[in-house]
Structure formats: C-alpha cells, structure tokens
Image (cartoon, rainbow, N blue to C red):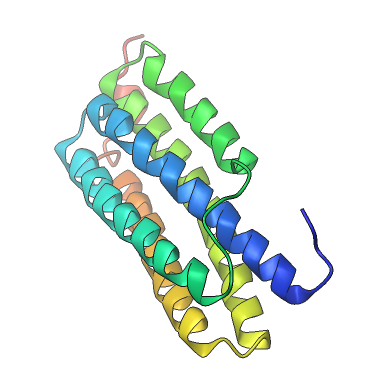
Length: 168
C-alpha cells in the first residue's frame, strides 16, 4: 500500500470498502437464514439488496478516480463477519439470537459508516464532487440501515424483555 497523497488514501479507502461490501454480500444470506424474526429477516434482506447496489456503485466509481477493484481483503470486515459467524452458529433462544444478530449487524454498519464518512470527506477535500455525492448517498443508506436495526431492537421485538422469554 502506497500512501504518499490524500488521493492514495482516498483510493485505498474505496478499495477497502469495495472489499468490505463484497464480503458482506456473501455473509448476509447466512444472517438472514439465522434470524428468527420476520421483521429482522426483511430488514437484512433489504440491506443485502442495498449492499449489492453499493458494490455496483463502487465498481463504477473506482475507475473514475483512477483505481481498480483490486485490493487487499478488508481485514476489518473479515473480523466482524467472523464474529457474526459465531453468533449464527451458537445455540440460542431465537429472540436472544436475534438480539445478537442485530448487535453483530450494527458493528458492521458502524464500520461502514466510519469508512464512508472518511472517503466522502476526502472526496470533498480532493474536489471530487461526483464521488462525494455518491459516497454521501451510500453513507446515508448505511446510517438508515443502522437506525432501522436500532428500531427493531428497541421498538417492539424486545419491549417485553428478552429475559422474560429466555429459558431459565
């Protein structure tokens, strides 16, 4: 990795996010299958479709800024998804598993929010207005996904309390 300029950092950030999004496209179907709540499954399915769109937009954006999709695997996302796999495989009460899946998904969202926030700011500094707009839209979508997960967790699904349903 060469980081001599802000442009280098910007391109590296885009490639890292591209790798992260590709990994997420592969992992989300397993999370969807593991979810017990229909509301959570629907939210994760919608985010899978959105994530496929993020991959496509990044594929369009990378050549526009003089980069390609070739990059090292995003180790941050790899680690987060490895943690998520432990949740998927763990025997658990369905409501507790859903709570753990939401927590794992929100860790992923927060990672993506940090990444997209950074590259959008760099695009602004580098006067890459089209890239800034695209990345800002993706950032907004990631923030909306995070808020939806919070709403599912705090709205009605867990209002009665996980511990009231969990086996003693």
